[in-house]
Length: 311
Image 1 (cartoon, rainbow, N blue to C red):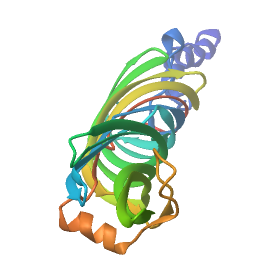
Image 2: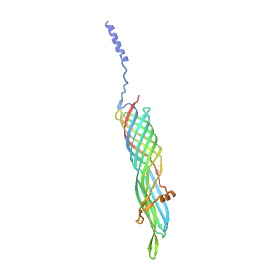
Image 3: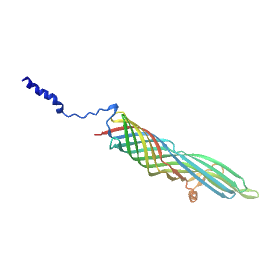
Image 4: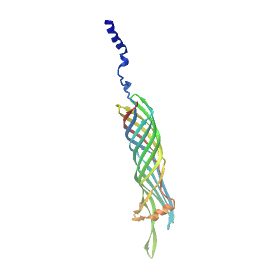
């Protein structure tokens, strides 16, 4: 009787592991490593290093009455400073190492410019003069890039390195103000006994130039890389560097019509710069173009959120 009573107990001890309720598979994570997630959302901010925008050249030569030759040259150099950028990305990883990334950003930078004006003249009696003047101007360039990238990721414990690149749609806006020198002359008469004699004044006007809210779109590309550090299962920190390429765009300055005083002498004041003067410049192909390069390099820090567990 005792032997029969022990037999069921022995069988239950041998086969009990096979009849226990199923349990969730364990996922031991070594070296602080976390489960892979399907989605990563990043919010970032940093600095953008912009490219040189370009130089505007203007040159003219003319004569009038007692002046055999007047030459005027203006060079306006525009250069974008380093600016700020912010943005966000969302990445869907189809596999643990490859995915699609959607990026949207906003980058802005100041665009100061310097105008250098050279002015020379020769009178009919052979006497001549030469002088110059410098001005400074301001501007601002804003870029909104939206990119669709292919992303590749390699993990090292809590660290992950990611490389991404793809096509970018740009929405750019430029505002800028500057000055160019425009030579003018005025003939007057004065009485020198026993006759009236004609005289002539010469000077240059500091005529304003402006590019206001000039907006354009373009297709370009971007490429970059980042390092992500996993702090918890759902939150991490990132450091990234990315280059955005956007094709150049040629824009034209608009003339600021109005009245101006002479730059070098006190003889010409409240001289108007009118549509006729602007038309004269356009007819002589003096359209004051600026070749803008919106491309920029971005360095940023961000916070990353991980979600969507991979099964």
